[in-house]
Amino acid sequence: MAHTSVMPEETLRCWVSNPNGLYVDGTAGGGGHDYLLLERHPQVRLVAIDQDPAALRAAGERLNPFRERVTLIHGNFRRMRELLSGAGVVAVDGILLDLGVSSPQLDVAHRGFSYQQDAPLDMRMDPANEVTAFRLVNTKPAEEITTALRDWGEERWASRIAAFMVDARRNEPIRTTGQLVDIIKAAIPAAARRGGGHPARRTFQALRIWVNDELGALADGLDSGVGMLTAGGRFAVISFHSLEDRLVKRRFRDWNADGRGLVLTRRPLVPGQAELNDNPRSRSAKLRAFQRR
Image 1: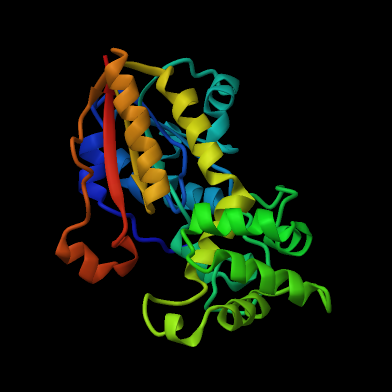
Image 2: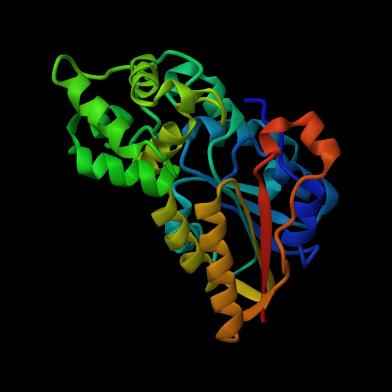
């Protein structure tokens, strides 16, 4: 499960305040940020959480050299307090959330995240989730689909795409990503498809957010995690689209205003040109950090 971690050095600086502390990664993924943390700080202990079993296995394999200092937990970071309490953890020195979909999830066709490969419509980060993209696309009314595409994908042609989906599924279920891409291309006028990247990008983003309730999970995870930080403990979040970044910015600002701590990043940190050249998928990443009083 090869994955290039975004802004590794910047993330470590924002995440770590106590070189002997206990840290949580709520989105362990391939374990890249975690490996750097454990390698740089020999006294640090880590709890690595991920809702994707494949990602958690990959993290465990990568972090095997440090296994005595690592606890792996399968679960959604929105239940962070409950998951940590179940592992006997009552307070932590830092929390990291690296949001969005990982490169391995995009690149494994059968997961259904990518509009570049034909595969079953799925998009679940946790295979135990009962909600799939197939279910939403084939059962939800046009009005609800329109709202999702507009609000979470910022899709200009949301209502037209939703109408085309509903019309198409009257003949047969929309089963694959390839079918959905064709519907989206048919719905968006040719002139509008000539620029702005792949025409299905925004719709696929919106469906993924909807399937996994990503914004709801983020709000819950932020609220659940901040109360577990020790004095001086830090909350670092890497986001990949404006809706996530806006939510994080507002939460950190509110916590600063009510005296819970200090926002460390007046403006979000972003990848430098060298990183963008090596990892184009990092182009939309923004890193914000907050420190508890």
